[in-house]
Image (cartoon, rainbow, N blue to C red; front, side, top):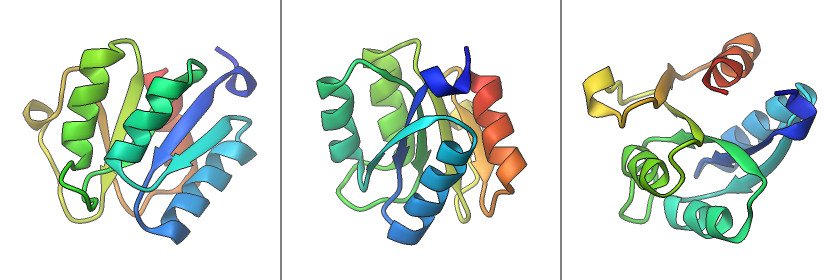
Length: 120
């Protein structure tokens, strides 16, 4: 799948980190949309059918963290590429829903783009 035909949803509560991730994906040729929490992300996913991938932080406000969001997405959209990220929480593969990737912060541009490409 060519990057320019892929929309990535970036879910991050820190505005600067969210903007940076969105710019990284946009510079790599992806279309990008953004959410600041899990409930916002689920609303966006329910309203749109063009999103192919999600990058989500683990620690977010609002009662649903990124791992729970990944599980909810996997249940409702089983083919969605999902990459979770954190600088403080480092889940094992067993802690994540099947097929969900993890990338530790801080990431390098080639790491985040390459990891997402591998998920797709």
